[in-house]
Amino acid sequence: MDLLINAGVFLYPLALCSLVAVAITIERLLALRSSRVMPNCMVEALLSHDTSQLQGDSRTVIGRIIAFRGERAADVEALNAFARVEVSRMERGIFLLEVIIGVAPLLGLLGTVTGLTQVFSGFSAETGLPEPAAFIRGIALALNTTILGLAIAIPALVAHAYLLRKVESLAARIGMGVQALTEDQSDQ
Image (cartoon, rainbow, N blue to C red; front, top):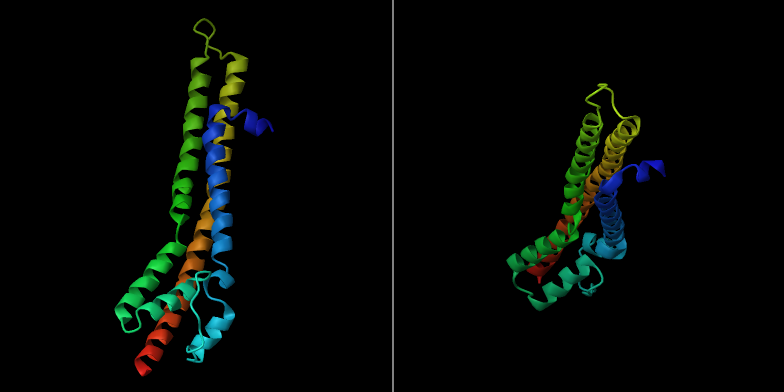
């Protein structure tokens, strides 16, 4: 609790960064589940090239692609472009994690500089010694904001890397599915 109290005014932007990072991570983890992107039953149908019974829907990414294929049956280029748009939608919000990865440590550094400024401005001209209370507050601000900034940025970096890897993996599966759809379409 002292860590939060001694962070001063920097607590508010750091808390906002933390809340945004947690919200984006949870939302993307839920949105990028296999059941929401490309359920196993659809993967099996695409692998077996039995796409005739696949129905498009708006609940899954591959379902939206299949529905789009039903609307524009002969346009393979449009299908590939639509699939790229869907993959791009899967990356929604992840860029904010990048921003937080950069901003949180910088806010911590700003708190460090502010705290050290308080320490050095608290020196007495007569004695050359710092005022003990100002010295303690300044050092506490410097250290606590640095700790909080890094404590926010490090998990955000881990979440960012994991989510990007997950999107890449799902994009490869979607690419395979689109390829199966276009091959099935050219066979008809």
